[in-house]
Image 1 (cartoon, rainbow, N blue to C red):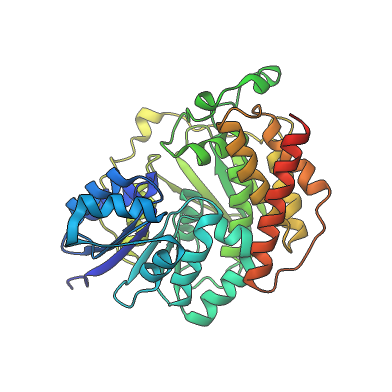
Image 2: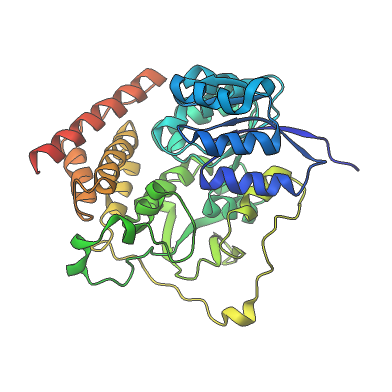
Length: 392
């Protein structure tokens, strides 16, 4: 049967996930039509995407950027800007599917708007669940939205779980195993870590990603955030999720069942695989990713993460155990610290130190509405900035 045409909104189309999504879409013009594209400040990149994919809407982060985009695309595209523009294209009645790929806390509101509108939401913005897990999943349930994970680890777990999965106990799941490459500093001497530069931290050995998520991979905070995200996505306690370092990034994650069976999803380290899986779900389409050559790979290695090397992991587990607004504070403090590192304001090892300082004095709250989540985010950012200034 011929698949129905999907109208697609891509939130964050000029980032690595957005670009990979458009690559998959371009391979299936009879199946996907781009409805809206959004970017923060990359005007020229978004203009080029508009010229190729002809969306009805384009959204920029600021009014000035929107004006520059209008001068490049003319009247062919309706150009909007800001949070209102993002919410409009995320929830628009003509949009069937929304790729939520805006990095960081900035992605929460438009992703939530898409979920409230009952869309098929492809979730690449892990921060939405880290910050507002209970609220977010409640809205998913109420709106009957379809939520599909895009992070390679969560997409792998999704593929390894039964189609009617409704919880760990009902499915006979013993634990989830999130795989991690270990990033660029997996074997760097501990005494050298403090001197690592932003360029070194962003030189990931396996994946091509944006700078913020690359730094998170280097500290392994990314894996800590993914642990929190997985606990919400799959309704499991953080204590039932283990992290295993797998340097080749071939096994993307695993599910262990009560009978001792362990199911794993394998593939080359290319984000087009989970993107294509989610775009076509429950069907399968060609992604452009080459076949996995196990003979050439020859061996797969695994090791336990060293929490002395990666203190962000223990910080994330503590936040996950605390629940409440602790994960939102963790994420906010980390975003501030990573930005400071990328701007050469603090050293690499200071990232975890800043987050730790914030979490040590954080007074746990229970966010029952979006305003409380946003307040926790704001307060944690202010505290992180203060810590950075005090230790300068």
